[in-house]
Amino acid sequence: MKKINLRHGVFWPPFILLLVAGLFSLLYPDLFLEKVNIANNWLLDNVGWLFSLSGLLMLVVVIAVYFSPLGRYRIGGKDAKPMLSMKNWLAITLCTTIAAGVTFWGIVEPIYHLVTPPESLGLEANSAEAAIFSMSTMYLHWTVTPYAIYCVPALMFAFAFYNMRKSFSLSSTLAPLLGKRTDGKFSSFIDGISLYTLALGMASAMGTAVLNLAGGVHYLTGWESNTVMWAIIAAITMITFTISASTGLMKGIRILSNINMNVYIIIVLFIFITGPMTFIVNLGTESFGHYLTNFFEKSLFTGAAAGDMWPKWWTVFYWANWFAWAAITAMFLGRIGYGYTVRTFIVVNFVFPSIFGALWMTIFGGTAIHKQLTDGTLGDILNNFGAESVLYAVLADVPLSMIVIPFYLFIVFISFVTASDSNISAMGGISSHGISPESQEAHIIIKVMWGTAVGIIAWVMLSFAKIDGIKILSNLGGIPALILCLAIVGSLLKVAYNPAKYDVTEQVKREESYKDTVLQREVNNNLENEKDLVESNNN
Image (cartoon, rainbow, N blue to C red):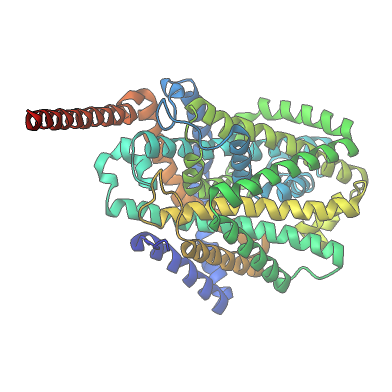
């Protein structure tokens, strides 16, 4: 049986901290929420601008690296063969990064922006201008910038792990910048902090998925969406993604990702064909032009001059969420990119998901906006029944809705499970000793423990703070991950400037070839000596 090989200094500090926070919030919910709100408000007031600038920086860096000399290098060395087919790689990457967020926010978020646009911009609720602002904001939050945040650390980890032959640790991504100082206690510290941030980010995403699923169950059965239902859904989801993660990359994760990809294609095409197609295309075209024209203004909008909280509760929330996931998700995304060139890696992890995000938001967001502008009911549903009810009110208008809604519930469930098992796999790996290119799976017990902790924290924050609790988790998890990702940018730029200096695969290959030559020479000499000895005895 495989040994657990736990990295105690990495696993226990963040794990215990999460459980203590969960216990404290159960025993003293009011005091707990008061303290985390204080921390969250301080973060939004003082660091929100840094999230905005950093997101833009990631976008610039990923484009620069694509055209740099590093773009020609192959992850794992020039003779490395891909561990996954292009189809499987695309499916796993897409499903790992978007999680259940796109299935929830793709319909719900545009209504928030349409009925309550930023006060400082002077837009009238439910106006044409608000509709364009809403859709263009979806492009900001779900296309190139967030996927750049994922792609930069993922690429740096892939190169460090496979080409620099560094350990399975996030500190390895800082080796070009800090050298040997990334070993030992520093490595454990970086990995422990990153585990904590991803656990918070995953709990945030799980809270979104649970709300989404609860809304669908309520619509279909009439059962109230409350803390008991959330606990049941969270438990089922947690058990499923933990089992899937425990089967390894080539079994559960690959199979679920392929299923997920196929159902995405089916639902996107169905909603587009049966929905307000002309309105969707026209609004998407106009809004995309608005997004491009006002890209820098939208990316760096902080609302500070007018005291507007909108950017902090939306754009900063998203950037914090992406950064919270990015650090450890990078280890999984980097691991599966073996055998492909850096430019192909960027296409799969940055270009393709951005295009998919734009299409999804155009179709689902456009459908929701059209309904709100036509009958004005979604705003009232949002205020009176909660965000999860908006999604199913939109799907109720779709042809064959009684088939579509259960199918959509399946998509939400499978989306979060697919993303979570990838990240639970990465969390298990970083918590373990002995992870290498040849042995990349952690013990099942470690994965179960992380899955349990994430599920508990998600349910606690959802039960006591609902949507605000989800956003608080993302914000608090994002700041340490942001600092790490900025340091990773420095490492990647050094590697991109002179990749030959850091790629040791050719050197290792030469050393191995030399050792093989010496060994073969020794074997030949031994054979010659034996031959001479036989001839001497015969004589």
